Image (cartoon, rainbow, N blue to C red; front, side, top):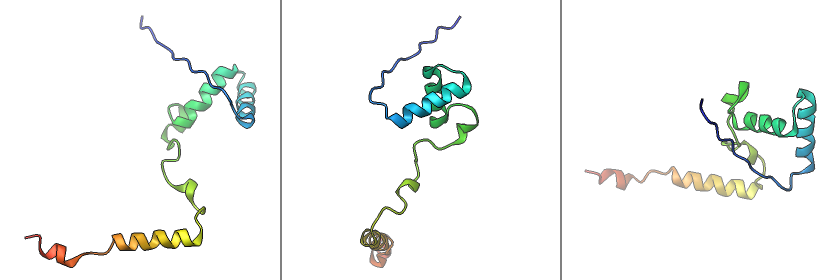
Length: 95
């Protein structure tokens, strides 16, 4: 029989909204708070059920969309434009 070592983590300072979500999940599914927390965590990181294909922790930049000022966005666009310029002399001297 294989021995499985389960890890324990103590989490302090859980925000009230997170606590409410965990309690709601526990009540809805008839789980202990511990099991409900693990279930939600597994879904979030994509290691369980239908959620396996999800990208965990916003690996894209969607969460940044719309937070720059116009000046910041213009500066970024100028920087990208500069990076996309081709130095013809550099390419000519590659022989």
